[in-house]
Image (cartoon, rainbow, N blue to C red; front, side, top):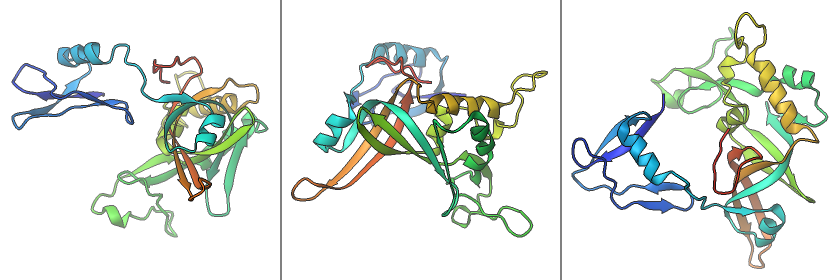
Length: 258
């Protein structure tokens, strides 16, 4: 269930002091007073609805829309929107084993790869848990006494192309789940709607197959870039990380998320 956070000056009122938009994170920074308090508001709370109507209606995007050619030439670190084709997803499984999915991967291959692109990890920090000789998961010692475990999608390295330019982008576990329409790793073996025998892993495989198809539509990607330059502005290092993923019909300034 979604929660909405508000700052209360007095009971029954919702007043935000010092409203200022953060151009990097694209959200409002709420500056409180010593008399303020914090309360969780549900999405259907009238105060949350009032705030959203006032501050989130037709909110323009402060993230620059760019292309790979311009961005690679500028060599500036920052957050940008790029419309690009996704060529490949590479999931590291072990030091010597990687699963590469691309336009040449059949639906059957993608489907059979799904069990290997998820792992069981610590529910607190996400560290992948090893098993002992009895196939029992070991504990995450850094998070003890917390012992809960959870399934995750493996992070991936995404190759994207825009024109003649191609880069690799790091994609975290949560964004892999978002790309798969928020299908949780725990749901993959579940039937979608009995008595049908269609399971979520079939849907997830089909989504990846469509995403990586050579004729697939470009996607709008929100990317964080980091350039490390020498004294001659030659890039010693360049890293790209995916911050968000939007469908192709997203209009600049309108965040129609998956």
